[in-house]
Image (cartoon, rainbow, N blue to C red):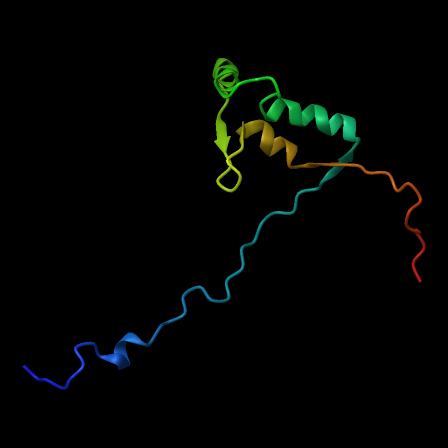
Length: 105
């Protein structure tokens, strides 16, 4: 056994090969439709549990309609998976209310 030697070979452990360093994820561009805030709120009501509805009642309602449920990993929100995918193509239309000018320099 050698006393003054390093058991780890530093030259081999400090080298790191970059893996997928400059990779981009390509996705399809989908057109987003602008709808009124009232219609957007109606679509959201179908996706998420209602205010007075318990989680078990929401799960039972989705099970009766043979729908898949999705749990958001970031915020732990429960929603209907198919309806949420359909909701992604819509964006609520907000009126300008004359706060900012439309003219560009």
